[in-house]
Image (cartoon, rainbow, N blue to C red):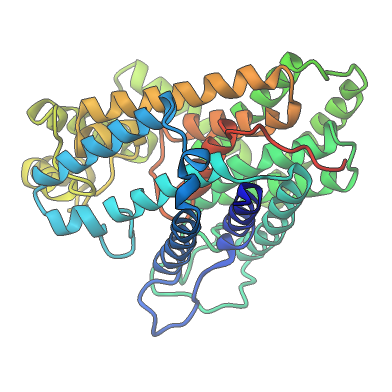
Amino acid sequence: MDISLAKRRIGYLLFATVALVPFVFVPVRRFHDFFYAPKACALTIIAMLFLLILLQYRKAINSLIRFDSINRTLLIYFMLLVVSLFFALDRELAIHGSPRREDGFRMMMVYFLLFLAARTGTISRTKFNVGIEISATILSIYGVMQCYGLDPFPRDFIRARWRTAFSTFGNPNFFGSYLVLVIPIALDSFIRRRKDISGLVYSILIYALLCTRTRSAWIGAAVAIVAYFVAGRLSTRYCRQDIRRLICILVITFAVVLVFNALNNNAFVQRSKSIYEGALSVIRNEDPERAGSGRIFIWKRVILLIRDRPLTGYGVENLRVPFAERFNEEVMAVFGRILYFDKAHNEYLHIAVTTGIPSLIVYLSLVTKVLRVGFTRLRENDTYCPFVASVLGYLVQAFFNISVVSVAYMFWVFLGILCNYDDLHPGPT
C-alpha cells in the first residue's frame, strides 16, 4: 500500500484548506450567515475527506497517525471536552455552537482532524507558502477596498455601514487574526527566499492589517515579526546578507504606516495611543472597567464564573447565559445598556470558563509541546521559521481576542505543520 500517495493527497487537502477556504463566503442577502456557516461547511467536507483517506488506508493507520506524546495530549484534551458536554447548561448549543458563530464542539473536532492531517500530510514549502501569499494578497486588497467604501458584494444589516477591513472573515478582529498568521509567510519569502515580489505582498498585508484598526492584531503582528527574526537567528542557515532585507522590511513597514496614518486622519497614532492610555488607566485604577473596549470588565467577571465551576466549566459556547444572569445589572451600570457577552475576549479565559481549568492546562501543554518540537527542528530546517512566528503571534493576540471558525482552523493547521511527522519538504526555491 502506497503510504506516500495518501500523504500527498492529505497535503492537497491542506493546501485547499489554507489557500481556498478563506475565500468561502456567501454574500447573498437571503442567506442568514455570509461568513461562518459556509466556511464551517467547507472545513467539515475537508475533514470528512481526510477521514475517508484514513479509512482507505486503515491497514496502515499506524503509519499515518502515531500515538506519540502530542497526540496523547490531544486525546486528553478531547476527553475533557467530552466530559464538559455532560455539564453544559445547554448541550445542543455546546455541540453545534451559536448561530453566526458555528464554533461548538463539532467544529473543534474538525480543528483536531485538520491538526492531525497537518501532522500527516506531505507538504511542499514552495507550493504551500505561495498559495497562502496569493490568497492573502487578494483577500487583503478586498479588505483595503472595504476600508475606503468600495465593496462589490452586498452586506448584511450588521456590516452595512462598516468602514474597516474585514474581507471575507466577518469582523475586523478576525481578519486581523488571519493576517497575524500569514504575514510571517510573506516575510520569510522576501528575506530568506529572496523573492522580491513578496516585499510588495508584505506591504499589502501590513496595510490591510492597519485597515482593520484592530489593536490586538497589531500587537500580535508585531510579536510575530519580532519572533520571526529571533527564530531566524536560531537556524543554522542564518545569513548576514539577510540584514539588508531586514532593513528593507523595516523601511517598508515604516513607509506603509506613514501612508496609512496620512490617509486616515492620524488613525494609527490615535489607536496606538489608546493602547497606552488603556494600560495606564488600569495601572492607575482610573475607570479600568472600560479599558480595552470593556475587556477588563469582562475578564474580571469571567474569573468569578470560573471560580464557581473550575473543573468542568459551563459548556462549550455556554458563557452568555451565566454571564447575563449574574452580571446584567453591572453591565447596565457600566455601559448604560444591556450587552450580551458570549465570549470572554481572551481565548485562555474562555477555555477555562467554558470547559474548565484542567482543559486549559492540557491545551497549553499541547501548544507548548508543539512549539518545543518546532524550535528543535528550526535549528536544522529554517522552513519552520515563519510557522513558529505565526503561532507565537496568534497566541499573543488570542489574549485579547476570540476563537472563530473563520480563522481558528488556520492556527490548528499551522500547529500541525510544526510537528509534522516527516519534517517539512522544502521544495524548490
